[in-house]
Length: 466
Image (cartoon, rainbow, N blue to C red; front, side, top):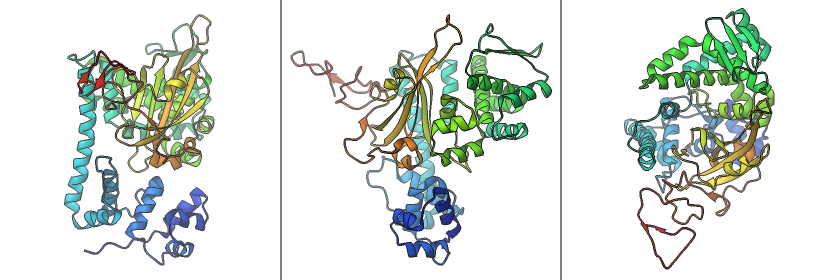
């Protein structure tokens, strides 16, 4: 069976234009001559299998969906599965192309099996960690159930995200400002606004139609609280449909999911998907610049970047978390292969712990997990004022990162040596499930391995991992 010839001159020119590359620069990135690239851009020659593979690796977001046929989509999914560290010697581009073209049914089953393996591994890690934790033998708490629901949804809720994007268009502008949200609440929903610090951060009286917001919060926080209430009222049907289909066990879980979905919709309203994704790519995910453009906080911007997983317009797969002064992970999500510990703290070697103690300074780290995958992570310590001397400000750090293969899209990777053997910090997920036997920062042994103790010999820890 012959492979379909793919001409993609327009797509190649679009990549050069968006990346501001000269023909010679793109040709060098693809390891071809400038004259050959010129022929490709003018559709005088089709792309070869090797070039398609190079383009997919060099420009994964730009090249996604090019060709748009079943064979090309199948090949793209095969590439992702084939890159799993599970395979020590992955197939080359030509082998993958033949597999996708000549054995489509088998290829699709391989892709489905790999996805099931990946999901099964995540669920098994959840069970293993639960058994090793102090909560072993108990049912999941409501907040754990909701957290796991968002994780298994890949932190993206399509119906709600699109509804919030449409609502943002009604409010006008690149992103709805505080005045537009206040006007919609008053005029369209008959809500009266009260700014007072006597009823917590936000308080809504449904019977009277009063919304009270703490004026002592930063302007970005006040705007988010208004957007939360607007989403809760204007998108209540969409939110109710998601909760109905979630299958959560308890009323408390469903109520927590309602709050989480309102927060999700607020972020989607303030940072509408397609405009935000385009802006993020334009500045290579520079969080400060994005926050300025959309009037959002550093944390809100990081969190939104981790949700850009729309099927027809995916963003860079990021992981995101928030860590408090005690090392507790209070928010977490990962669209990458890195998965956070569900119980206890994160690896102490991870840069986010240092960032908690150094507010308003961005720290960058190249880290490698036990499976050999490398990640570039950015962490920043934040202080959120309380608006009162009587209440201590909240202190925490947020972290955002991606796999090293996506480093070209992430401005914080600039200047890092991504390939040097000793350049990466060797981190784990948590001590309970980390297999590294030679870690000097280990707090306790892994739960699935035996230990041996020699009373006459002492290392950093008083045991050896079997």
